[in-house]
Image (cartoon, rainbow, N blue to C red):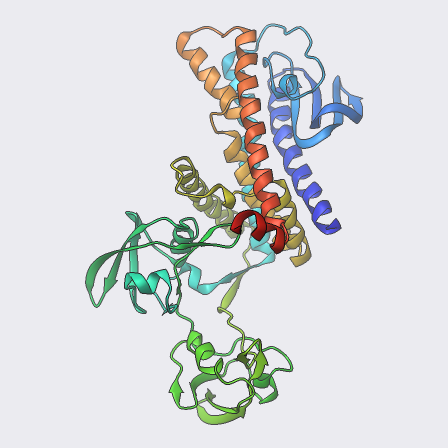
Length: 445
């Protein structure tokens, strides 16, 4: 818990400071005075004054603001900051637009460099994610089996969206819990169209279709002390059969071993071109047999030089931006459940896990969150930078500024809408961490 809280404060604090520093830097470059640079909203807890700017930490930690003379009413006036002074003459609209754009732009640029840092340190990525989405295995009694999907099928499109890789397919399936998908696939050189409805599983309501990428029956990792390791199996061994029954994919291993707890089985393996039979006795694990061969996808560590890493970071940002707008579109059309959206509690938990996994994982997460923060702030929602920019665009069309009171009313609407959204995502976060007994009582009856 302490690790999660500290990691969350670090991640959120750094990204808020970067965002507000973007606004601050643009204002200074344009000669606009900055009265306040605040991390957080509301009551001033601590701060220092330098060069006419009050640098402060405020009581409500979810956000921040800079008060720039001539920019007009801002979020600090609505969200409980100090009382705004009398507004002087507004800056030219083009200057206001540059200042407003600078915050999200800084987050997006920072995302590229955070991700570049992760690529320089090395990102461990499953190889299959970038491969064409050829089905390697279909789970028995799964939505995919019921729909008629077979191992060897190449998934071409889902809901008219091209599936180039397994990464694309997993995103399409994960965000489609309990929603029918139209799938176009290729089998034996012929195109087929079928419908499949992934089940919504877990508290995140992730879509589960029951298909997986090909996974050769090669040992990657063993559980120490369990039958396979004790019998002498090693990483790199290819499992050929169990009691004479062929193992074509590693997924075949579990149903062949599971029925034999505490019963000796013969596992045929190939090592360095030699074939041998190995006897072992699966342990009883809740009534199922287990030998301790882990289902691990082969992965590669991408470790790049500075220039290549920046390019890879930029490409990742472009890919994630496409996915973000795709998911936003599905949210608006209610094709993606709100339960999949993460709020402060979930982000804190994820930040804690990333921090424990290592610095490279943490800065990669910071890159992804920084990108989302930049995109979110550009949405045309009043009180966000995108909302201010939308008002500026409207004022440019009508060739006059709206009255200050009108702008304040618009900001208030946006503020209360964000509060409502915050309540919803906090509720979802709390639901995800409820004890099973409480969750089942509330949601399962």
